[in-house]
Image (cartoon, rainbow, N blue to C red; front, top):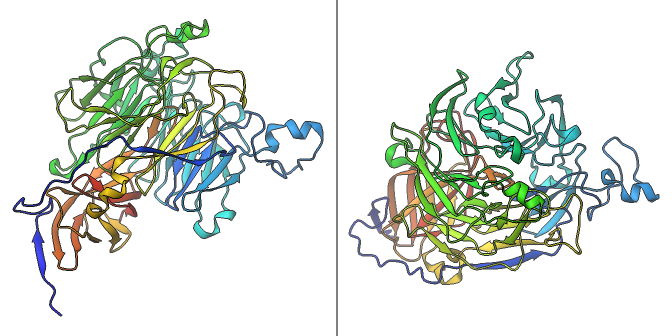
Length: 552
């Protein structure tokens, strides 16, 4: 048997003879997955076992799942008190993607408005919350085929400060997480602590950005790990670069242009644009979009809903030149999620146009997602996608799935589950937004049968991947890895995409393509843990497969 091999450059055919893939009709579709998730998808995270953890607040009232026992061990009976007691109802669920089913989980302290990061072994480290949950640390370790045995485990150790509306970022070494901010908390701290006496660290920047007349306007600060190991922190309208080792601010960036605020309760959103091997991952660019106008909170409390912000700013935070490049969404938006798609484009989904975050403070739901294309020229980067019929405002969330869809859940601008006689009832339906690239007409261009030589890769090491492609590859074949986030309150914490270096690529006559890729150089560039690897052929992504980067 003779196998013919075609040597390709890693961005496609070297002669450029392949036709471009037609990409007309790019609005996408909406699919309803479940009529009732049981609990509000206020917080959401995709696990490496292809399940999604969703949870809300334990004091939100009766969910659809009654528990036999409280976490303190006492039985939940049929007496009137237990039938209305929140602790007798589950407020967390695990959604299995393949079976489209929900399984209730138990929480013993309230994680309302909390934060989360994945550790290198795929465990979700979940921190903070409300009241008795404000200083608590919880863990969720996915367990695959034995998923019925998985449940939340609460640590016996406490945080140094209450972390309600705080943000979380996984760090390069020792599976440590940094927590920043919280309601009337102007510090940051690490989990786990290196020594028993380690406390939190004062961060004057949080004092400086605090707006006492608007419930802070610097809560859930946007934090991103730069590829130089420093922490970018954006709060209200300002931003800094913090050296965590030295507890020192090493850069103060220009204020983002325009009035209003970007952080809770103004609730714009932020994303770290994809990092690229072409510059050795050294160019780090942050984007901040939307938010609420000055005075929006006080106006909303008087039932006057001010138009939100349309503006988006992006800025390179490495190097020595820091200028906000401003752009404008088609319409105002806040309470939205920004999800990096496998193509490297940004999906802006959920949210509202008037008011701000908080109970019943928003009006005019944003039903049309936007697609932001970072590589297009300024003024041409936004396009409007297919609208949904379900409003997703305060306490909604979204996350990317391995098959390329975007899971969307939640919305509850009320203290308890409220379904009638309100502008936006509690929303328990589960949807998937299906981007255009998932449509059948693109299947002949879609890389399939993606296989990875090994799933635990050392930093800087080469590794092999193979995939099947009926047609010759396009002029643009890319390999990216994506770290799924913990999403809540319009911020996808720890979300990260890297475009990997392809060393060699060979195609056989059978249609198989074999590529040699290079792992990221260090955990500073890509913190240890699970990532989704995707092959993108001319803008059409494969289904993603899990890969793990770890210290050798």
